[in-house]
Structure formats: structure tokens, C-alpha cells
Image 1: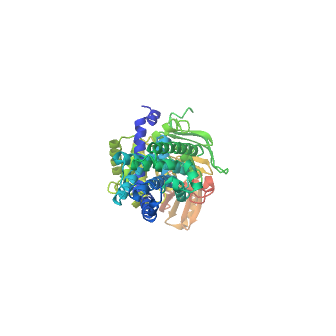
Image 2: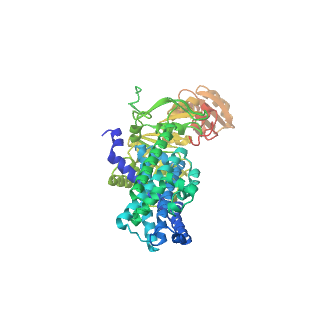
Image 3: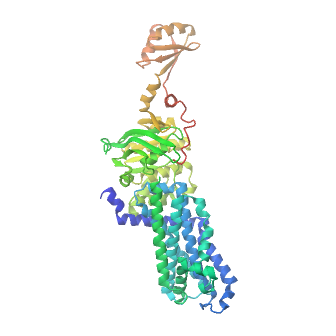
Length: 267
Length: 325
């Protein structure tokens, strides 16, 4: 096999993606500053929201999902997915600033594999996160009428959203190469989160915000998760959630690949 | 393809790299490195060494000119070039959160090795660079020397035909430096071509078959260490006599061997021209009954060469900053 053919060999590139995804995951679990936003922060917010705003479920028209925590956990999954994706971008920016990215570039791998490795790592992390959050919420009274298929679907939507956010954060990292910029994007996550019906039904949101939610793809992601968990189409359409998450993933991964090409072209 | 591109390990023609802002870091570099050679690329900080290496390792595109590594154009055939090179860049770019073993296995995967192959190659290289005991420790806990050795091992994973080492011993203690030199020589003995940048003259002298001196983006002198040294002057012979009163007579006798000057009381310095053997000099004095106390030969060093061709010392300030190049 010629050297160029090796670079194009799908099996080889699949191994490269898997190895880079494994490294990305390892970094997540070994770096305290990544564990905090990916795991601790969403659970803290879940505790605050579930206890502090639980009286909201007594409002007329609030959907019935059993314990209130069962309703808001969808927002926790979304928050975790967004933060997991953002930390992927931070890790990539750290690689660029620290020189590890150059090591990847001197290896005979397709540049798209470097992006896919990072995004794949976030998808796997999204699965781990979502499973943990659902388990914790279960311990605190959440029940999932969707059963195992509904839980699996919800986890899949959350994981794909994590990959989507990783694609966006990676694109920013590749475009700017700035670790400090990525670190300062944390507040943006909350803007994305609160312009989607993460913790309240869309009908309960105020006028302008409700209009904004229509254009936020994360609206369909979080509603899809909720609908899948509770087997309740009125809460959200899981397949629309899958579609939104896949669309987000595809769009941001493409953006990231373009950013990689741009970065290499201007070197 | 240039006529020599296929037969040289590295061929560079009129290479230019200009950075945004107009800094011309590499300004028309031409060089050729033969297969199996250790080529020392010597220059101060900011001379253009690292920029040249980054172009040759496909990390940077040249503004003008062309370069081939193992016959592959580093721009048009970058993928093929990457498959035959090993690279250890100036700052050992290692993930501090990974262990040495994990990094080697990752490097194996990046070079297309299957999991078992990557594991075996990694274990083999850990032994080679004597990091077996530290293999499962996070790299963040490694000393500078260990990091450099691991970086070298990573560069060797793909069994490269051409190995690029960018200032591999900068910041290392003498023992670690000597160990790395031994390893570079061993690799070269196995047939690996080595392109080594350094700002240490001693390193170039110890390791390199040929040396290119780069200053302000241009190669200002090139040759074997001996050739370069011979260009700046002949060796000098310092002779101390047992009887200082015989100095003037000795000076007259030695004038036939070269330029002779008084050194200190009872001593002469002979700047030898042509033949460089000590024996005829000593024989001349001996036959005249002049007893010699000590004889010392002083040959020019690469320091002298560097000073002569660049006008400043290698360790001094370079032209501009190369940081980030």
C-alpha cells in the first residue's frame, strides 16, 4: 500500500479517531478543571433548580412528570452536554497553545480525523454524563415513563448535542487558537441554556424569550430529551430532538473542519 | 522534482518564509543532506532554524522555494513526507496528563499501527530510552531529561528515515545531554538521517557530519566541522622552552614553519601554515639543541568559526526573536 493510500485507509483513520477520542476522554477525567464544569456544575444547578423552583409545578398547566426533578433533569442533560462540548474546545486550544497539536499535524493522519476524534470523545463523554445525571435524578425521585428505550433515546440526544457543542467550540479553538478566549466562553453556555426551555415548559416563558426559543435548536434537543424520558409527545418530540442534535453535530463539525482547513492554509 | 530530490534525504532550494508583518525568517536557504548523514543546523535564537524545521516537517508552508524530504515535496506531497519523518520539536510537546506508555501508544495509532503493534513498539522504545520504570507515570512528573527522551522515543515510533531534532538538548544537564547524544549517534549508526538544530557549538561539533551555519535567515557557511574550522585559521602551536634565553634563536629557526611570535617569557606561538605536523617543529628545535618543556596545539573551534562568519557569538542575541516561529 502506498503511503498516500495508507492515509486514506478508512480502517487506519478509524483507529486514529478512536485513539484521539480515548485521549480526549482521558483528559476530561484527569483534569479537575474539566470535571467541575462537566459533572459537578450541572448537578449543582439541578439541586438548586429542583429544590428552589419546585413550586412551579403547582402552576396551572405545568406538565405532570411525577417528581419535579424528573422534569428539570432534561435541562441538566443539556447543560452537561454544552459544558462537555465547551471543555473539548478548551482542551483543543490548550493543545494548540502547548504544541501538542503540532505533534498531531506532523503525523500522517487526515486533518478531519483530528476533529472527529475530539468530537467523538465528547459524544462518549455525553453518554457517561447523561447516564450519571439520570441515575442521580432517579435517586432523588425522578421516574422515567419512557422506560429503557426512552432513557437510551434521551442519552443519545444529549450525547449528540455534546458532540455538536464540541464541534462549535473546536471551530472557535481552531479559528483563534486562544485558550483564554475559550475559557471566557462559559457564560455563553448559559445564554444557550436559558434561551431554550431547559427548566420550564416553553409555554411558561415570557414573550420575547419564547420567540427566541423557536430559533434555538437546543429547544428541540431538550424537549426531545424530555419527551423521550417521559414517553410524552406533549413534552417534546424525541425524533425532532434527534434531528436537531444530528443537525447541530453535522453543522458544527463541518464548521470545525473548515476552521481546520483555514488554520492550515494560513500557516 | 529537482534532479537531486530523490537521491538526497533532504533537499532545499531557495527557501523563503516571510511572516505576517514582513519578518523574513528564512531568506533563501539552500541545502542538501545525504542519506545517513547527521546535519547540524547551527545558529543563534531567531536565526531561522526552527522556521526551516517547521517547513521541512510540513508544519509551515514556505513563502517561496521548495523542499523535499526523502524525495517527497513537503507541500505537494506533505502526507507522504509525514510518513517517513520523525519529529522532536523545540519544546517537547507532551500531554502532561498522559503517561509515557499512553503517549507512545497514541503515537503508534497516529502512524497507523494496530493496537498490539503500537503497544509492542511503545514497550520497545521505552526500553531504548530507559523509561521503563517511569512508563506508567504521568508525563507531568517527568524531569526535563526524561521528557526529552520520551519526545525522542515518540519521534522514533514510525521508524523514520529522516529524524528532525529541534534543539534537543536545550536546558538539559550535562549527563542528560550526553545520554541524548549517545542515542542520536546510535540512531545514525542504524542508518537514520538526522537533521539537528542547535545553538550549542559543542553539540554540532560532537554530533554532526556536516554543519550549516544560519544567521538572519541565510546559510552563511557550510561544511564539515574541520572544514569550517580550517577556513578561519590554521592551528597554533604553543611551545615553552626549558631555557628562556633561547627564545630568539628558536624563533629564527621556526620561521620556516610559519608565523612565529613571542608568547610569554620562554614561550613561542607558531601559527602553522601548510603542513600541520608537530614532529618537524620539535625536531628542528631538538637538532639545534634547544630543549622543549611543553608543546600545546590549539585548533580553531566552531566558536571561532561562528564569530568569523556572523560577527557575533552563537550564544549571543540573535536577529529578532524566533519564539513562535
